[in-house]
Amino acid sequence: PRARLDEMRAELGDDTTMLAFVYVSNRLACLAVNGQNQPVIVDLSWERIRSATRGLRTELEATALLGGPAERLVRAALDSRLAQISKLLVEPVLAAVGGTDRIVITAPGELHRVPWVMLPALRGRTVTVARSASRWLHARTQERRAADPIPGFVVGPGVARGAEEVDRAAKAWAAAAERRAPGSATPARVLTGDRAGTVDVASLAHDVDVLHVVAHGEHAAYAPMLSGLTLTDGILFGYDIDQIPRAPETVVLSACEVGRSQVRWGEEAIGMMRAWLHAGTRCVIASPVIVADDVACELLAVVHEGLAAHLEPAEALAAATERTGLITPFAAYGTGF
Image 1 (tube, rainbow, N blue to C red):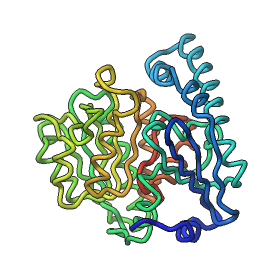
Image 2 (cartoon, helix red, strand yellow):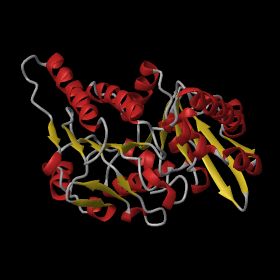
Image 3 (cartoon, rainbow, N blue to C red):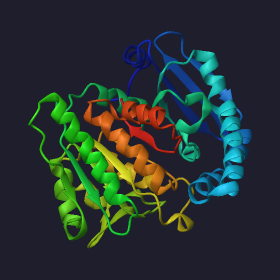
Image 4 (cartoon, helix red, strand yellow):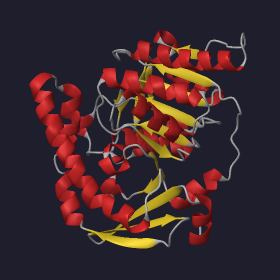
């Protein structure tokens, strides 16, 4: 059911702001809502924002692939671009409504290229990018399935540092369980090599509450359900994900390395994100662009420390970003808190 404005304000309270961006006929506006102040609608300059985002993909990916002086030059250009986008897109809205530490964003397809958590105005805040205001509100009213989530991990073929990333994440869960009840920790379920086939992964996804997948991606920009994860015996498509009887509540996708030259900008991880949310997953942590293996390994391992401590996904991502100092395109999609 469609949420009413008064329902949204009551749920948001005084600590959360919703930024609902709306694009119609070459015009962009944002409805900003929280429980502190009256809602406001802010008109934004779509032409200037569109101009500022041109070249963003190239700079984001170059910072992940380059090193040395070239990387520093590109990083400086990227920082300048992100500051400009933040000034045009977010800062006027937060100034009008009064910002909070927790932000819910809904955005049209024209803004899928924006790496929200990298924008200066949103750094240090807990951010979730929801499918819609109504879906976010509805998910907030649903009970969580498990008080102590069960984690599962998958490493697809040919991913550098994939095994290390999963090993560190699994150890974070074991350490958290040991702190809560000494002697109670059980090994996390980890699928690698020949065990990481499509049927095996679908079965694991049904059994766990938190699923972390490190794999190459096959991405379909215009048909998200045909996006897929490359596993040992083939591709797990979005349609396969939709057949999982009980999708995990949280999915972490470290799968953003291939297929970019063949697809429309901004749709890579978005395609898989949509497939998991369509199947019933509450939140997906993913990046829409290339992220260096070292960065993904360091950041996502710390994210799992937060998840194992029962933080919400967006909270765990924000805490990991602050702790590691790594500013990345990874974002929480869906109901991150």
